[in-house]
Length: 113
Length: 111
Image (cartoon, rainbow over all chains, first blue to last red; front, side, top):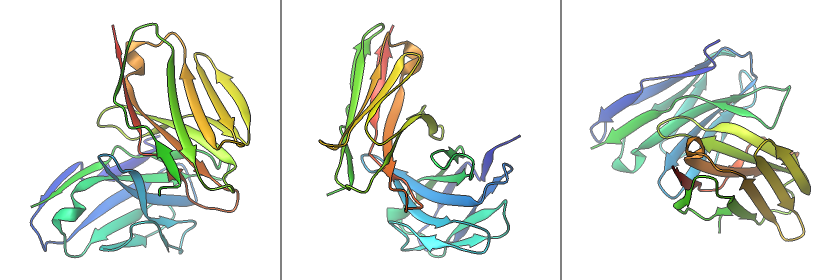
């Protein structure tokens, strides 16, 4: 049981480049989330998916798009990266058995130059 | 104003000390309150959660919620160097599908 996995672990982009962050979970969870974590700001929700086939905006969705590819996978895309998107990105999932607990991946450290 | 406010610290204590970590929240609809622990360069993991007001104890950890004052606390007894981490409080209402996190408090327990 790997839990929540994220790729890549690290990435450096130039302004204007695009990239996709990948996330997968093997816990058969319905809900999946993308957060960014910045110093002093805590975790802020970018997008979430309550179930396969649905996605909704969170607190800071601008500049991002998501795809819930299937029940296991939820990807985050930066179409035209900006320095303000330099952050640590976490994917999380949540099951129905315990709605209070989100399981987080190890994170992707992204730097945009 | 953020819906969940948390003192960012950092907080440094000697081993064996009692630690008190605190948050306040503004959304009266919040009913579920959680504490997540995040070790350096790792993802957060759930430490404890409580529903509505009251206390919950788990080993050396006690979570406390006072809904009248909108105050959330986590107490750590006999703190250990292995408790050194960032602690994040989080809340949500029953109808919401998303957690609202505080900014986190960085704790260092010195041996």
